[in-house]
Length: 354
Image (spheres, rainbow, N blue to C red):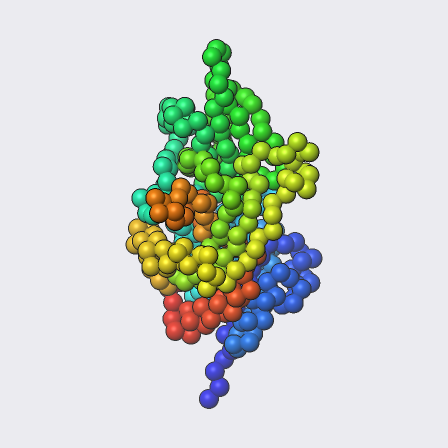
């Protein structure tokens, strides 16, 4: 007796023309399509935009599984309508990864505060209102000299600021701020004016996260790619975000980030980090946030900066964010791992909230 081929819809954002012309081969996820097809799935593109959301809903309801790559913020758009659509689809039967409820647990900056006591944590604080922000942040900035503020949801450096106190003996307290978005330049202004600018983040996302600035930032960021609870690779990149641009300006070649060098899961320089992620930090995070194994996203990543070295000279790692909504580019080994995990979830049963 034949078994029906299971269908997987792959979702990303685009306009009507992109939806009309999308194939399994003409997009950046083509390797994922190839690996899904190779193990027997019928994988199809499902380009999304709010203007034709109902068409996408009907398409997803006809699928067995849904893989979603959509940024939380893009060109002034949010995931608000998409998340409602995905919750409805998941409630009606298809398996969705990453489920919006899982994203809200681990894919927002608040996770940095909730997990600060884990080995990847730092001196992290959370402000849930403009009043608490005004009352508490200035003293922390004066004590540290430099802090990093982050809005709860965002990508591409949106709403991430380095704030540095400047030495002024009279007049209003002056700070230098640098936005993490590409092309930003340092700006000097009154601390009160900068804090007033940040109040919009409370209306949009409900909180601001406050972390210490990491002096080893120029040594780069390590992106640890996870397939559910196992490492599937790494990306190491010399980043320029929160580093003042060179004299040539923010658009000069010297101001551009270095290429992200991809490594497989077995890459020797990162085995200590791998052991921490697989054996300690991911299980601890799951227990703390109430995420079971079936609810972990198929693909997610944890971005680390180098923290202070230990007395024996070993590196430590400080979590700067977890990405769940739209994790791409990915290591060469990741598409096959994604396909295997999809097969495991769909063919052996899964939670709808994954």
